[in-house]
Image (cartoon, rainbow over all chains, first blue to last red; front, side):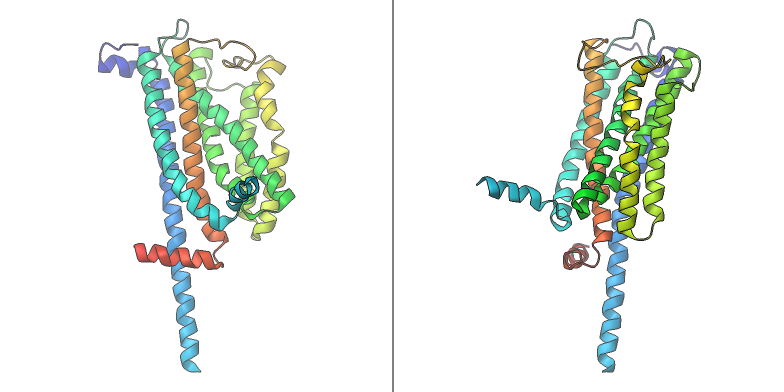
Length: 66
Length: 253
């Protein structure tokens, strides 16, 4: 298929809304999913690191008291 | 020799072995997904001809069909992992099932959404309560149900078991979706591609669609591996190896 011009390509023979509405929403969902998943793992790592530091701190406090 | 090979494969069923493997594999599948999607989209928009009956709107097919396939396939894989988890009591199985669900739901929604946008110009309606569409909507609710159920139960072992039962029972719906177009008189057309007869579409259209399906597979594998890494860390947080992993992450930062 060869398109005459950019505007012809975007028009999709009058079906632009349906075609680009499909591709646009799909693309947006994929981007959102990737951002959420990658950010989520980083958050888990940070939270567990904080938790471990807090536990280590309380352990040293206990040891110092003895 | 053979036993050694088998041993090395099963080794990766342990979360501490699977975690780094997933981390190495995910970027490779992500790259494959991008390359395949670019090739598929190029073929779909610049090589595949205009459809004689539908004009240009048919180009929705390059995401609609792969998304619909993925939504059904992911559910079956989810049910399979759930079954393995219930029978063999392996820790990783339930995590895999839970990592698959959101991506399955995403593809299920995409199939419904693109179907609606394709249905309006070709059938004159965004939605009809036809057997194919209704059973696909049920699949979306099964995904949501699985995610809500496993998230709502505090004790992970009980959450896994409850989710597994829902996944296994819900799997009955997948063949119903697949065969709905032959079992009932639906507005939705029959299968464009089947194993038993020649496909009913132009070769370049078919290739574009199959390449997009491969891209969806690669994407799914990448994103699920990334998601399961987070789940593994959370679930295994009391173990020595996660502590070592956290130290290593801190040293890298």
